[in-house]
Length: 108
Image (tube, rainbow, N blue to C red; front, side, top):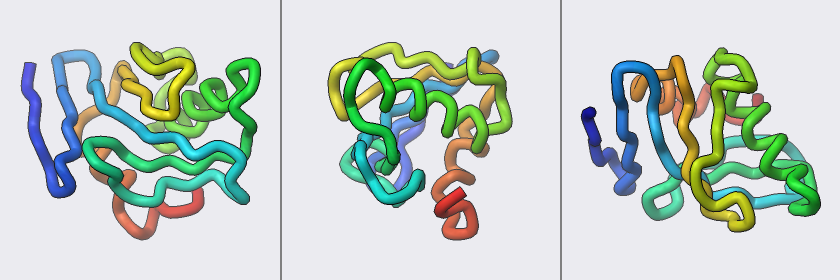
């Protein structure tokens, strides 16, 4: 298992089959987008409201689309009822997660 700290203190843990990282979710945004790093997490704006798991579902679907993995590969392992969540993504790499922060990926 390899854990690295990156600019902004973003922490990504990579194993042979998955990566684990944190996101900070802002629900009820005007569009779905990754807008940088907040603390040790990727800041993610989502259009869905934080009711009945809608923001969690959209968070998993959106990141699965960006990382080009099946929706079932994204699991919220901590923070289901919080804005700060820890995610495990099977089949993704640290480099793929870091690529999400590139300016060209904004607003997908």
